[in-house]
Image (cartoon, one colour):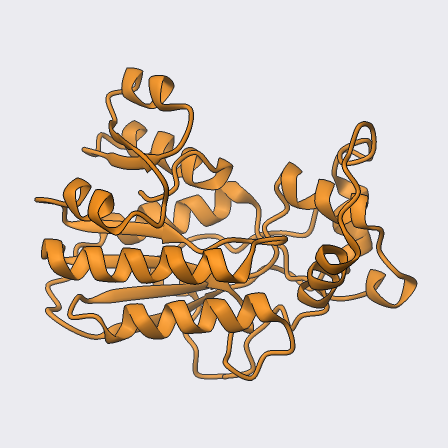
Length: 255
């Protein structure tokens, strides 16, 4: 699991350990806790190709969650390229990649365009891969960033198809358990949530998150975050299979 210092990746690591899996991680922080849990942890940045390749030696599956709301597109690209190259060089059997729904080279926001480029790089690597396209994952960090930035009236009703962290983690755990024998190919799955407006997602969380002591984003960072929030949070392709249906998992419910 790459970037296991981030909350969703760290939650996934804990869940995989709970399942009895042998887990390795690359993390920049929180290393002592990961190692105490029995996770072989390499200390470093999630775009360090050499470090990731070394950590991948003998590994079956690599999981990489591309940066979420507020992520720097340049950093997202650097991390994604490093993972694709390292996985191919280490001879892993599969890459699981999580990107935002609506990712595409023609997307209106830079973050989705970066996610699309990462996905294309993973698909082109000589490693079988699964790409999971997910709706808004309302972590405390994500909702805090949204509140700190402020949500204009015209965005409050945007359907963000929210997917709780626990539901996304179960998708990745189920994919890890489904050890395909495929030797090539790139499968794309959608993992969007129910039709829920952004204002309802924010109302369902802790209303103080991101308010007290929050650092206001720069105008450029705020504009980038709002552009990402504008969506789309669902993929238009009707033939894109649902991760929930394919894996026999319950779909997320409205908060």
